[in-house]
Image (cartoon, rainbow, N blue to C red; front, top):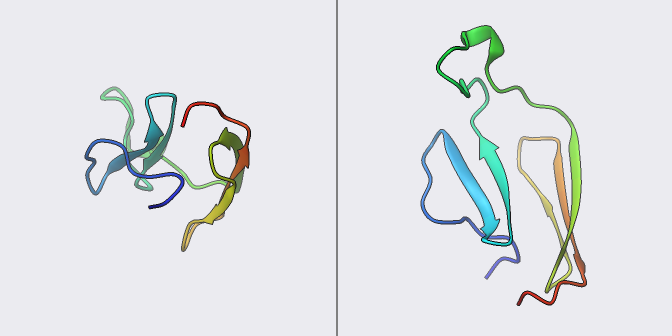
Length: 78
């Protein structure tokens, strides 16, 4: 089992990863976040590095995206 797993369903447009203690929201490039925006305001991809605390230290790379997710040991939530 992965240290950071998909949380409760999802779709090809949007998934949440994590658990009830913290979620990382992952959206398809170009997805419109609210109904008042136009296509020029859709989701864009930016180089992003995030480190969180968790029960098991690990590092994640996301294929085809410039994202890095690191998990440091130190959470008592497991």
